[in-house]
Image 1 (cartoon, rainbow, N blue to C red):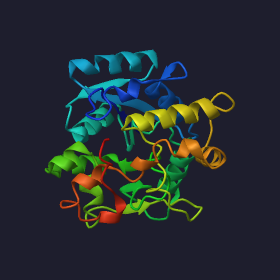
Image 2 (image 1 turned 30 degrees about the vertical axis):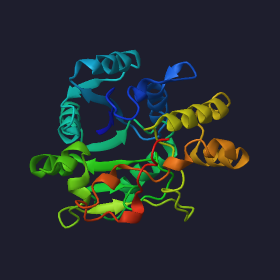
Image 3 (image 1 turned 90 degrees about the horizontal axis):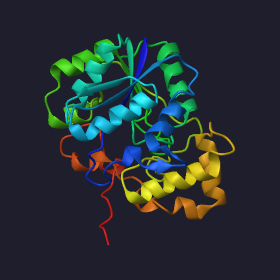
Length: 268
């Protein structure tokens, strides 16, 4: 059983309630779930949120989307993922953050196919170590045994908060695979398709407005073509390209280099 766990919560220091912001009459979370359901592989989807009262609305949205909702600890995302996967009898677990509404279903399929078909039996496969696709196409796949081992042994706050660092920071303990963008390009620090700031919301909203009406299953390549033809859209959130959570933990992360992140621009 493949279980895709989508972590979502209303509390966000930079953009509160970002997953329920409206785009084309739907929430960002609804549009993201719609894209996830376009994958070719068979999977069960679970929205994992916190037990905090402000996340009642996430559970309500999950019900409207007819997606199971698991509620757990606000800050221990590792436990939240593990418990949600356990509840749904997962053999394979996919971690997809809810701040990736433009994620290309084809990239998820490509990463899953690699996981299942590679000659090496991997415990963990992602497209993030190193990342090459535009930020916001994050796919992490792990066996339930791998997730359980992390759940039993992870202790650092960043390992609990971000679910998978214990795995990819300990390559001596796990068989780890990575899928790179077949173009040979690396847009991970130059293109930002994820949502954490108001500018990201305006960018994502514009991309959906441009592409979704004609083709709901638009691809990463379609977005890049749009940005090439209308560079003003690329400019909306380009100042945040390369900004990710690594920036706050460079002194703790062994496998992440300083050039894989950058500080957020100072607000005007």
